Length: 159
Image (cartoon, rainbow, N blue to C red; front, side, top):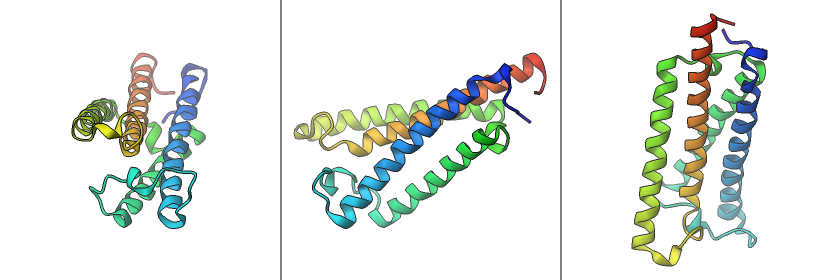
């Protein structure tokens, strides 16, 4: 089981980056809830926050489940032990491959959106796409940490 030490001091850097991405995603969910329920004027209109591919009530449930998992991962990083800091090398490789495919799908989605709706250039109608990039980055970092952590254990034995 991993325990943070000088040998894997960059684990704290991963923890900070994962926390920042979690807070960004939580901010998106919170902003979306504000716009959907309170129609606040200082944020973009609701149509720009949700693509409509998933009904909004289901989307909120999915987003809260994702946040629960993200906070569980952060808890394990804060403790320096647990399921999410001890994933297998195979899982780390899968997470990186998945995150790259996920990000590529979002790039394709952005291109298609720009072709079909040129009036939505850059950020005006693409909020969901940008927050999918946040999730892809979170998954990538978790996979990268997992691979680096497993590589250390192979070279130096378990911590």
